[in-house]
Amino acid sequence: MKTLVSAIMLSLMLSSAPSIVQQGVPFAGDRVGTVMSRNVYHGVDAEISALPTASGFFDLLGKVKAVYLGYLARNFPERAAALAAEVDATRPELIGLQEAILVRTDFPMDGPTTPATTVALDFVQVFLDALAARGLHYVVVVQSIGLDVELPSLLGFDVRHTDREVILARADLNTSDLKLSNAQAGNFATNCTIPTAILGPITIRRGWVAVDAKIRGQSLRFISTHLDGDCLPFTSLIQQAQAAEVLSGPAATDLPVVLVGDLNSPGDGSGVTYNNVIAAGFGDAAVNAGLGAVATCCQADDILNPVSILDRRIDFVLFRGGFTVLSAEILGEIPADRTPSGLWPSDHAGVAARLRLPQP
Image 1 (cartoon, rainbow, N blue to C red):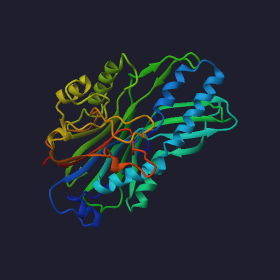
Image 2: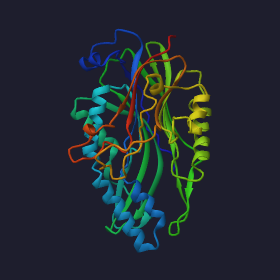
Image 3: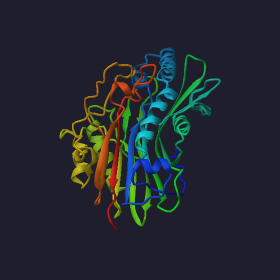
Image 4: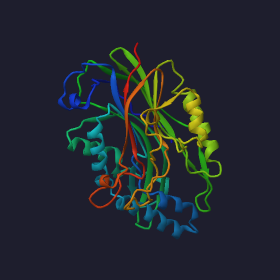
């Protein structure tokens, strides 16, 4: 399926402090902005991982049913309210979302013969609605389509799972201080392919999204990505190839760059892919802010574990080109962040960073 790119040209204002942003007062200080990386978790890691083990057609139908019921059990509308609270607390101008899936159905079931178009759950729209409920207004700047697979289920209808990389931007600010242009999206040439007995090989397609931001005369490029984490024993090699594509693609610019995302590569010295990106000239906002030991992944698949079990740091705000890190924050990692029904906002923690931009 051809990459789907939705790009819009925006003019936005960038504030120097959360209290000023909340009041809608024009920017009146240094070139300072906040960015966020948020893997929102599609909610069905265990269920999707079981699909390749299907022993026959009837077993496959049952496993696809479990995927669909898993979406409902992980209750993204409730989790989106918790994620919106994180945005409310940090007020980022730009957000990179990973695993922002779209779930569609089709009846009668016929697999991908008739593409499913009936929307059952749109994570992006649900999240935008949760933000709006708090008086926060964000828009989709650009998105790319990753894994897009449709299978029949024991429920009597097809289930279509579409993964997306998305950049959101604030849309409720004045128009003089930040302009977005050159929205881009792409898929990686190197991806994980998983063999299955019933379905044949399945390629876990991944990609990236990017946009240029001009803030009071100073430009930068904002990139979000989600690298492979599902292809042992080849995961590290695939990650390295994907990161190299980012570095030679959207990050190959003379502009200052902010790169956010889930790299699936630990930032503790053991992650070869992370190390390669740092060696390419990137700094790490969490490290600069003294949070380099705070884990961001991963809660239990059902995200109902009562105590956090995050044990590695694989989600990042990285930068290149003269930024100064003013602060950074890890989001959604303490029990108080859980939803009323006991769900964590995601199986990952989020990362937000407040940066002073390079001087022109």
